[in-house]
Length: 385
Image (cartoon, rainbow, N blue to C red; front, side, top):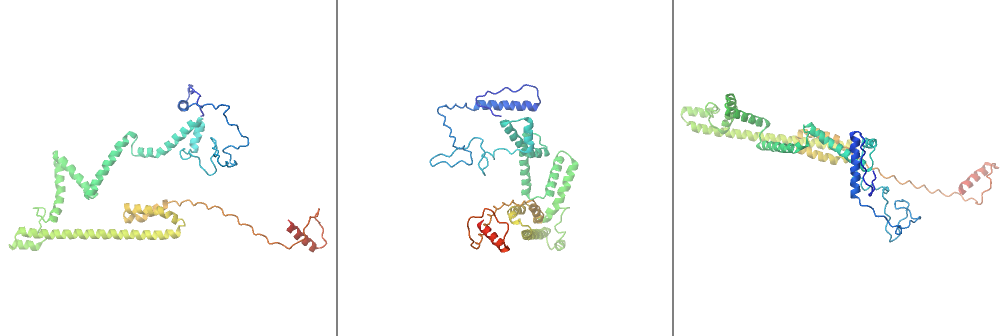
């Protein structure tokens, strides 16, 4: 829609139509009014100051135009002229790239110029935001105003997870802790069943702790039960019970400490072995793909970055499967076609035998006295041609 600077905005048609036509008409009128207010009126050029047109001067966008003389500014391209060969339009990146569906809708609605550009921009934005909208709907968010609340809840959840991780508890231990807390809360309100369950739960934890510390808990843990020699000395009166319990506690703590250390060493050794197996697999995969895939060298930088992230986030036992999947998703970069080779120059023919030259006869003979004359005539014509 081209609107001159001094042309007043026209009133939109009030004929009853569908909602889409009314909205587009109102949009056209608004754009026209905004252009009429913002664009200053162009001052007319006096007739006596207009430069004379030179019939011999080609237009600025003429590809065959001669270069300007020394000291003369280059000709400016005319408005609307196509870009030079090999040069993209200046605003190509800023303009949305319409598709066939958008263009068909623009044609069916009869949109022109600025209205069509606005429609293309809106259609492009709608398509870009569609995946985000679908993702929000998938998690139950229909109102954009709820996004700050969602972000805050996500932050709180991340903080809670981080606190649990820092405690070193397993998922089972954390779940049991929550159950115990719920039982204690109900027991404080007079729920005897909850109080009994909480007691049984904590009792199961007391016996291992008492054994670890070497402490006596009547009815639950006797430190001398696993140390018959100390129990015999106590029974014979050769060793006080308190001293026997102390010695039993020292033995139990030493045994427990040794068990923990052995478990840690076994765990670390297993992790190192799993990591080495993963590294060996990656080396074999690298060598095999280098031989089997001609485009492996071009894919390898992307694969290296994917492997780095996989090694940081996953256990070595998952490296092989995730690396193979990551490699399958990598697309080989499109090779740039090499410029066509220049055609080989034809070899210069060797000069033939010198033959008498001169003006050719007005009419080529058709009958020769002998085959040798015909051959001589053919060689002569070839040398002259």
